[in-house]
Image (cartoon, rainbow, N blue to C red):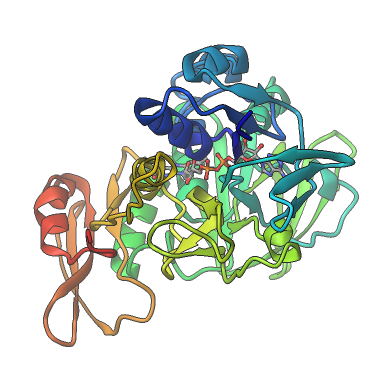
Length: 385
Ligand code: FAD
Protein backbone atom coordinates (compact mmCIF):
# COMPACT_ATOMS: atom_id res chain seq x y z
CA UNK A 1 0.00 0.00 0.00
CA UNK A 2 1.21 3.58 -0.75
CA UNK A 3 2.46 5.51 2.26
CA UNK A 4 0.14 8.40 3.05
CA UNK A 5 0.63 12.09 2.41
CA UNK A 6 1.24 13.31 5.96
CA UNK A 7 0.27 16.86 6.96
CA UNK A 8 1.43 18.13 10.36
CA UNK A 9 -0.96 20.76 11.69
CA UNK A 10 -4.72 21.26 11.46
CA UNK A 11 -4.84 25.05 11.46
CA UNK A 12 -6.08 26.91 8.39
CA UNK A 13 -2.82 25.86 6.70
CA UNK A 14 -3.06 22.10 7.19
CA UNK A 15 -6.80 21.77 6.61
CA UNK A 16 -6.72 23.97 3.49
CA UNK A 17 -3.90 21.99 1.87
CA UNK A 18 -5.86 18.79 2.54
CA UNK A 19 -9.06 20.32 1.16
CA UNK A 20 -7.37 21.60 -2.03
CA UNK A 21 -5.54 18.28 -2.47
CA UNK A 22 -8.78 16.28 -2.23
CA UNK A 23 -10.25 18.35 -5.10
CA UNK A 24 -7.47 16.94 -7.30
CA UNK A 25 -6.78 13.50 -5.82
CA UNK A 26 -9.47 11.43 -4.14
CA UNK A 27 -7.41 8.24 -3.73
CA UNK A 28 -4.02 8.87 -2.07
CA UNK A 29 -4.31 8.22 1.67
CA UNK A 30 -3.93 11.41 3.74
CA UNK A 31 -3.10 11.62 7.47
CA UNK A 32 -3.26 14.86 9.43
CA UNK A 33 -1.46 15.00 12.78
CA UNK A 34 -2.04 17.74 15.31
CA UNK A 35 -0.87 18.55 18.82
CA UNK A 36 -4.21 20.26 19.56
CA UNK A 37 -7.79 19.00 19.58
CA UNK A 38 -8.17 19.20 15.78
CA UNK A 39 -11.32 21.34 15.68
CA UNK A 40 -11.53 23.40 12.51
CA UNK A 41 -11.85 27.15 13.15
CA UNK A 42 -10.89 30.48 11.64
CA UNK A 43 -8.06 31.91 13.76
CA UNK A 44 -8.70 35.60 12.87
CA UNK A 45 -12.06 35.25 14.64
CA UNK A 46 -10.28 34.81 18.00
CA UNK A 47 -9.66 38.54 18.28
CA UNK A 48 -13.15 39.54 17.14
CA UNK A 49 -15.36 37.13 19.09
CA UNK A 50 -15.94 38.68 22.54
CA UNK A 51 -18.16 41.42 21.20
CA UNK A 52 -20.11 38.80 19.25
CA UNK A 53 -20.42 36.78 22.50
CA UNK A 54 -18.96 33.70 20.84
CA UNK A 55 -17.33 31.07 23.03
CA UNK A 56 -14.72 28.57 21.80
CA UNK A 57 -17.27 25.91 20.89
CA UNK A 58 -19.36 28.30 18.82
CA UNK A 59 -16.23 29.35 16.89
CA UNK A 60 -15.47 25.71 15.99
CA UNK A 61 -16.75 25.02 12.48
CA UNK A 62 -16.19 21.24 12.53
CA UNK A 63 -15.00 18.47 14.85
CA UNK A 64 -11.90 16.44 13.90
CA UNK A 65 -14.22 13.51 13.12
CA UNK A 66 -16.24 15.78 10.82
CA UNK A 67 -13.06 16.94 9.10
CA UNK A 68 -11.86 13.34 8.70
CA UNK A 69 -15.10 12.47 6.90
CA UNK A 70 -15.10 15.64 4.80
CA UNK A 71 -11.50 15.09 3.70
CA UNK A 72 -11.55 11.29 3.55
CA UNK A 73 -8.44 11.43 5.75
CA UNK A 74 -7.15 10.25 9.10
CA UNK A 75 -6.95 13.01 11.74
CA UNK A 76 -4.80 12.23 14.78
CA UNK A 77 -5.43 14.74 17.57
CA UNK A 78 -3.46 15.55 20.75
CA UNK A 79 -0.46 13.96 19.03
CA UNK A 80 2.81 15.84 19.00
CA UNK A 81 5.37 15.04 16.32
CA UNK A 82 8.71 14.91 18.11
CA UNK A 83 11.21 14.49 15.23
CA UNK A 84 11.55 14.24 11.44
CA UNK A 85 13.59 11.57 9.69
CA UNK A 86 13.97 12.77 6.07
CA UNK A 87 16.35 9.94 5.08
CA UNK A 88 13.91 7.27 6.29
CA UNK A 89 10.88 9.30 5.05
CA UNK A 90 9.23 9.03 8.47
CA UNK A 91 7.99 11.34 11.17
CA UNK A 92 8.43 10.30 14.76
CA UNK A 93 5.87 10.55 17.51
CA UNK A 94 8.00 9.48 20.45
CA UNK A 95 8.96 5.88 19.62
CA UNK A 96 6.34 5.49 16.91
CA UNK A 97 7.45 6.03 13.29
CA UNK A 98 4.90 7.18 10.71
CA UNK A 99 6.06 6.72 7.09
CA UNK A 100 5.07 9.24 4.42
CA UNK A 101 5.16 9.53 0.65
CA UNK A 102 5.06 13.33 0.94
CA UNK A 103 5.20 15.49 4.06
CA UNK A 104 3.70 18.96 4.62
CA UNK A 105 4.87 21.00 7.59
CA UNK A 106 1.96 23.30 8.52
CA UNK A 107 2.73 23.50 12.20
CA UNK A 108 2.44 27.26 12.56
CA UNK A 109 4.23 29.70 14.84
CA UNK A 110 4.69 29.78 18.58
CA UNK A 111 4.07 32.75 20.84
CA UNK A 112 7.01 34.73 22.15
CA UNK A 113 7.15 34.89 25.94
CA UNK A 114 8.60 37.85 27.82
CA UNK A 115 10.85 37.02 30.76
CA UNK A 116 8.68 38.36 33.60
CA UNK A 117 9.28 38.52 37.33
CA UNK A 118 6.68 38.51 40.09
CA UNK A 119 4.62 35.86 41.85
CA UNK A 120 1.80 35.96 39.28
CA UNK A 121 3.93 35.86 36.10
CA UNK A 122 2.56 32.36 35.41
CA UNK A 123 -1.00 33.73 35.08
CA UNK A 124 -0.12 35.69 31.90
CA UNK A 125 -2.05 34.25 28.93
CA UNK A 126 -1.40 34.21 25.18
CA UNK A 127 -4.16 33.46 22.70
CA UNK A 128 -2.92 31.63 19.62
CA UNK A 129 -5.47 28.83 19.21
CA UNK A 130 -9.02 27.84 20.06
CA UNK A 131 -8.05 26.12 23.30
CA UNK A 132 -6.20 29.26 24.48
CA UNK A 133 -9.30 31.27 23.63
CA UNK A 134 -11.49 28.94 25.71
CA UNK A 135 -9.18 29.42 28.71
CA UNK A 136 -9.09 33.19 28.12
CA UNK A 137 -12.90 33.41 28.31
CA UNK A 138 -12.99 31.20 31.37
CA UNK A 139 -10.43 33.37 33.19
CA UNK A 140 -12.35 36.53 32.33
CA UNK A 141 -15.57 35.30 33.95
CA UNK A 142 -16.62 37.90 36.52
CA UNK A 143 -13.59 40.13 35.72
CA UNK A 144 -13.60 43.70 34.48
CA UNK A 145 -10.03 44.78 33.64
CA UNK A 146 -7.55 43.39 31.09
CA UNK A 147 -3.99 44.53 30.43
CA UNK A 148 -2.57 43.60 27.03
CA UNK A 149 1.17 43.50 26.39
CA UNK A 150 1.88 44.28 22.73
CA UNK A 151 0.44 46.81 20.30
CA UNK A 152 0.73 44.86 17.05
CA UNK A 153 -2.27 43.60 15.06
CA UNK A 154 -3.28 41.03 17.67
CA UNK A 155 -2.91 43.34 20.70
CA UNK A 156 -4.86 46.18 19.04
CA UNK A 157 -7.62 43.85 17.84
CA UNK A 158 -8.08 42.32 21.29
CA UNK A 159 -8.12 45.82 22.82
CA UNK A 160 -10.89 46.87 20.44
CA UNK A 161 -12.94 43.69 20.83
CA UNK A 162 -12.72 43.55 24.63
CA UNK A 163 -13.58 47.24 24.95
CA UNK A 164 -16.69 46.74 22.83
CA UNK A 165 -17.60 43.81 25.06
CA UNK A 166 -17.50 46.11 28.11
CA UNK A 167 -14.04 45.42 29.58
CA UNK A 168 -11.63 48.12 30.75
CA UNK A 169 -8.54 47.65 28.62
CA UNK A 170 -4.96 48.88 29.01
CA UNK A 171 -2.37 48.43 26.26
CA UNK A 172 1.36 48.49 27.09
CA UNK A 173 4.33 48.21 24.71
CA UNK A 174 7.89 49.53 24.51
CA UNK A 175 7.10 50.84 20.99
CA UNK A 176 6.83 54.40 19.72
CA UNK A 177 3.44 53.90 18.14
CA UNK A 178 0.72 51.29 17.59
CA UNK A 179 1.20 48.70 14.80
CA UNK A 180 4.88 49.67 14.64
CA UNK A 181 5.84 46.83 12.27
CA UNK A 182 2.90 47.44 9.95
CA UNK A 183 2.31 51.17 9.52
CA UNK A 184 4.10 54.54 9.71
CA UNK A 185 3.75 56.64 12.85
CA UNK A 186 0.95 58.94 11.59
CA UNK A 187 -1.32 55.94 11.00
CA UNK A 188 -0.41 54.43 14.38
CA UNK A 189 -1.34 57.73 16.06
CA UNK A 190 -4.70 57.86 14.27
CA UNK A 191 -5.57 54.40 15.55
CA UNK A 192 -4.31 55.35 19.02
CA UNK A 193 -6.69 58.34 19.17
CA UNK A 194 -9.63 56.21 18.03
CA UNK A 195 -8.95 53.49 20.63
CA UNK A 196 -8.41 56.07 23.38
CA UNK A 197 -11.73 57.72 22.46
CA UNK A 198 -13.36 54.34 23.10
CA UNK A 199 -11.74 54.17 26.55
CA UNK A 200 -8.57 52.11 25.94
CA UNK A 201 -5.66 53.31 28.12
CA UNK A 202 -2.36 53.22 26.23
CA UNK A 203 1.19 53.23 27.66
CA UNK A 204 3.82 53.44 24.90
CA UNK A 205 7.50 53.28 25.85
CA UNK A 206 7.73 51.12 28.95
CA UNK A 207 8.34 47.39 29.17
CA UNK A 208 6.37 45.13 31.50
CA UNK A 209 8.82 43.75 34.05
CA UNK A 210 6.70 41.68 36.38
CA UNK A 211 3.23 40.69 37.57
CA UNK A 212 2.36 40.25 41.25
CA UNK A 213 -0.80 39.25 43.03
CA UNK A 214 -2.36 41.80 45.38
CA UNK A 215 -4.07 40.86 48.65
CA UNK A 216 -7.55 41.37 47.10
CA UNK A 217 -6.79 38.94 44.22
CA UNK A 218 -6.20 41.59 41.56
CA UNK A 219 -2.89 41.79 39.67
CA UNK A 220 -0.22 44.46 39.98
CA UNK A 221 1.76 44.96 36.78
CA UNK A 222 5.19 46.55 37.19
CA UNK A 223 6.55 48.64 34.30
CA UNK A 224 10.22 49.57 33.92
CA UNK A 225 9.44 53.30 34.34
CA UNK A 226 8.45 52.79 37.99
CA UNK A 227 4.74 52.73 37.17
CA UNK A 228 2.44 50.09 38.64
CA UNK A 229 -0.89 49.26 36.99
CA UNK A 230 -3.73 47.30 38.52
CA UNK A 231 -5.70 44.78 36.46
CA UNK A 232 -7.53 41.45 36.67
CA UNK A 233 -5.88 39.59 33.79
CA UNK A 234 -2.74 40.06 31.68
CA UNK A 235 -2.63 38.92 28.05
CA UNK A 236 0.65 38.78 26.16
CA UNK A 237 0.52 39.55 22.44
CA UNK A 238 4.16 40.42 21.88
CA UNK A 239 4.71 38.37 18.75
CA UNK A 240 4.97 34.96 17.13
CA UNK A 241 7.99 33.05 15.89
CA UNK A 242 7.75 30.38 13.16
CA UNK A 243 8.25 26.88 14.59
CA UNK A 244 11.59 25.79 13.16
CA UNK A 245 13.27 23.70 15.91
CA UNK A 246 12.29 20.21 14.67
CA UNK A 247 13.08 21.13 11.08
CA UNK A 248 16.48 22.50 12.03
CA UNK A 249 17.27 19.40 14.11
CA UNK A 250 16.46 17.24 11.05
CA UNK A 251 18.89 19.25 8.91
CA UNK A 252 16.36 21.29 6.91
CA UNK A 253 17.50 24.78 5.98
CA UNK A 254 15.93 27.48 8.14
CA UNK A 255 16.07 31.25 8.47
CA UNK A 256 13.32 33.19 10.14
CA UNK A 257 11.05 30.31 9.09
CA UNK A 258 11.56 26.97 7.34
CA UNK A 259 13.11 27.94 4.00
CA UNK A 260 11.29 26.88 0.86
CA UNK A 261 11.51 27.57 -2.85
CA UNK A 262 8.58 28.98 -4.80
CA UNK A 263 7.04 25.50 -5.03
CA UNK A 264 7.00 25.38 -1.19
CA UNK A 265 9.61 22.62 -1.17
CA UNK A 266 12.08 22.69 1.71
CA UNK A 267 15.75 21.80 1.31
CA UNK A 268 14.63 18.12 1.56
CA UNK A 269 12.91 16.36 -1.30
CA UNK A 270 9.32 15.30 -0.46
CA UNK A 271 9.07 17.75 2.44
CA UNK A 272 7.09 20.97 1.98
CA UNK A 273 6.32 23.85 4.36
CA UNK A 274 3.52 26.43 4.28
CA UNK A 275 1.58 28.80 6.55
CA UNK A 276 3.08 30.56 9.57
CA UNK A 277 6.10 28.21 9.85
CA UNK A 278 7.37 28.77 6.28
CA UNK A 279 9.69 31.35 4.75
CA UNK A 280 8.91 31.24 1.05
CA UNK A 281 11.68 32.72 -1.12
CA UNK A 282 12.56 35.11 1.72
CA UNK A 283 8.94 36.01 2.62
CA UNK A 284 7.79 35.03 6.13
CA UNK A 285 4.16 36.18 6.04
CA UNK A 286 1.96 35.15 8.94
CA UNK A 287 -1.40 35.96 7.37
CA UNK A 288 -4.33 34.19 5.76
CA UNK A 289 -4.04 35.29 2.11
CA UNK A 290 -0.46 33.95 1.61
CA UNK A 291 -1.51 30.72 3.31
CA UNK A 292 -4.51 30.24 0.97
CA UNK A 293 -2.35 30.89 -2.11
CA UNK A 294 0.21 28.39 -0.80
CA UNK A 295 -2.46 25.74 -0.14
CA UNK A 296 -3.75 25.94 -3.73
CA UNK A 297 -0.30 25.77 -5.33
CA UNK A 298 1.00 23.03 -3.04
CA UNK A 299 -2.07 20.85 -3.63
CA UNK A 300 -1.30 20.88 -7.38
CA UNK A 301 2.33 19.95 -6.76
CA UNK A 302 1.34 17.12 -4.42
CA UNK A 303 -1.16 15.88 -7.00
CA UNK A 304 1.61 15.63 -9.61
CA UNK A 305 1.75 19.04 -11.33
CA UNK A 306 4.72 21.02 -9.96
CA UNK A 307 3.36 24.52 -9.31
CA UNK A 308 4.99 27.70 -8.04
CA UNK A 309 3.01 29.83 -5.61
CA UNK A 310 1.92 33.25 -6.83
CA UNK A 311 2.00 36.00 -4.19
CA UNK A 312 0.34 39.17 -5.45
CA UNK A 313 0.31 42.21 -3.12
CA UNK A 314 -1.72 40.95 -0.15
CA UNK A 315 -2.79 43.74 2.24
CA UNK A 316 -3.87 42.82 5.76
CA UNK A 317 -6.88 44.35 7.50
CA UNK A 318 -6.70 45.24 11.18
CA UNK A 319 -10.10 44.62 12.77
CA UNK A 320 -10.45 47.82 14.81
CA UNK A 321 -13.87 49.21 13.79
CA UNK A 322 -13.28 52.64 15.43
CA UNK A 323 -10.46 53.15 12.91
CA UNK A 324 -10.16 50.30 10.41
CA UNK A 325 -6.62 49.95 9.06
CA UNK A 326 -5.41 48.23 5.89
CA UNK A 327 -1.67 47.71 5.67
CA UNK A 328 0.53 46.47 2.89
CA UNK A 329 4.10 46.77 4.23
CA UNK A 330 6.89 47.01 1.67
CA UNK A 331 9.07 43.88 1.46
CA UNK A 332 12.01 43.84 3.87
CA UNK A 333 15.03 45.77 2.60
CA UNK A 334 13.17 47.93 0.05
CA UNK A 335 14.35 51.54 0.39
CA UNK A 336 11.92 54.37 -0.22
CA UNK A 337 9.78 57.07 1.27
CA UNK A 338 6.27 57.44 2.73
CA UNK A 339 3.90 60.04 1.28
CA UNK A 340 0.93 60.54 3.55
CA UNK A 341 -2.33 62.42 3.12
CA UNK A 342 -4.59 62.53 6.12
CA UNK A 343 -7.67 64.14 7.57
CA UNK A 344 -9.06 63.85 11.11
CA UNK A 345 -10.07 60.18 10.90
CA UNK A 346 -8.92 59.01 7.46
CA UNK A 347 -5.50 58.43 5.97
CA UNK A 348 -3.82 57.24 2.79
CA UNK A 349 -0.10 56.58 2.82
CA UNK A 350 1.94 55.39 -0.15
CA UNK A 351 5.41 53.93 0.17
CA UNK A 352 7.32 54.45 -3.08
CA UNK A 353 10.81 53.15 -3.81
CA UNK A 354 13.63 55.21 -5.26
CA UNK A 355 12.27 54.63 -8.81
CA UNK A 356 8.83 55.90 -7.76
CA UNK A 357 7.22 52.42 -7.82
CA UNK A 358 4.48 51.85 -5.22
CA UNK A 359 5.84 49.08 -2.95
CA UNK A 360 3.57 49.39 0.10
CA UNK A 361 0.66 51.37 1.48
CA UNK A 362 -1.52 52.08 4.47
CA UNK A 363 -5.16 53.14 4.56
CA UNK A 364 -7.27 54.18 7.56
CA UNK A 365 -10.95 54.92 8.08
CA UNK A 366 -13.01 55.65 4.95
CA UNK A 367 -9.94 55.40 2.74
CA UNK A 368 -9.70 51.62 3.35
CA UNK A 369 -12.13 51.44 0.39
CA UNK A 370 -9.13 52.18 -1.85
CA UNK A 371 -7.34 48.92 -0.95
CA UNK A 372 -8.15 46.98 -4.14
CA UNK A 373 -7.15 49.78 -6.50
CA UNK A 374 -3.87 50.34 -4.65
CA UNK A 375 -3.06 46.63 -4.30
CA UNK A 376 -3.31 46.30 -8.12
CA UNK A 377 -0.57 48.89 -8.50
CA UNK A 378 1.94 47.12 -6.23
CA UNK A 379 4.21 44.63 -8.05
CA UNK A 380 3.71 40.95 -7.18
CA UNK A 381 5.81 39.71 -4.25
CA UNK A 382 6.28 36.42 -6.08
CA UNK A 383 5.22 36.56 -9.73
CA UNK A 384 3.24 33.75 -11.34
CA UNK A 385 5.67 31.63 -13.37
P1 FAD B 1 -1.74 27.37 13.13
O1 FAD B 1 -3.16 27.76 12.99
O2 FAD B 1 -0.98 27.88 14.31
O3 FAD B 1 -1.72 25.78 13.17
C1 FAD B 1 -0.60 25.06 13.58
C2 FAD B 1 -1.02 23.62 13.80
O4 FAD B 1 0.17 22.83 14.01
C3 FAD B 1 -1.88 23.39 15.02
O5 FAD B 1 -2.85 22.41 14.68
C4 FAD B 1 -0.90 22.84 16.06
O6 FAD B 1 -1.50 22.02 17.03
C5 FAD B 1 -0.01 22.00 15.15
N1 FAD B 1 1.33 21.67 15.68
C6 FAD B 1 2.32 22.52 16.07
N2 FAD B 1 3.42 21.81 16.42
C7 FAD B 1 3.12 20.50 16.26
C8 FAD B 1 3.83 19.29 16.45
N3 FAD B 1 5.09 19.26 16.86
N4 FAD B 1 3.19 18.13 16.20
C9 FAD B 1 1.91 18.12 15.75
N5 FAD B 1 1.20 19.25 15.53
C10 FAD B 1 1.79 20.41 15.79
N6 FAD B 1 -4.27 36.86 9.68
C11 FAD B 1 -4.94 37.60 8.75
O7 FAD B 1 -4.61 37.51 7.56
N7 FAD B 1 -5.96 38.43 9.10
C12 FAD B 1 -6.36 38.57 10.41
O8 FAD B 1 -7.28 39.33 10.71
C13 FAD B 1 -5.68 37.80 11.41
N8 FAD B 1 -6.06 37.86 12.71
C14 FAD B 1 -5.42 37.09 13.64
C15 FAD B 1 -5.84 37.14 14.96
C16 FAD B 1 -5.21 36.37 15.92
C17 FAD B 1 -5.66 36.44 17.35
C18 FAD B 1 -4.11 35.54 15.56
C19 FAD B 1 -3.40 34.71 16.62
C20 FAD B 1 -3.68 35.48 14.25
C21 FAD B 1 -4.34 36.24 13.27
N9 FAD B 1 -3.95 36.19 11.92
C22 FAD B 1 -4.63 36.94 10.99
C23 FAD B 1 -2.90 35.26 11.47
C24 FAD B 1 -3.50 33.96 10.90
O9 FAD B 1 -4.59 33.56 11.68
C25 FAD B 1 -2.41 32.88 10.82
O10 FAD B 1 -1.47 33.32 9.87
C26 FAD B 1 -2.92 31.50 10.40
O11 FAD B 1 -4.11 31.14 11.06
C27 FAD B 1 -1.82 30.45 10.64
O12 FAD B 1 -2.27 29.18 10.28
P2 FAD B 1 -1.29 27.92 10.31
O13 FAD B 1 -2.11 26.77 9.87
O14 FAD B 1 -0.02 28.22 9.61
O15 FAD B 1 -0.87 27.75 11.86
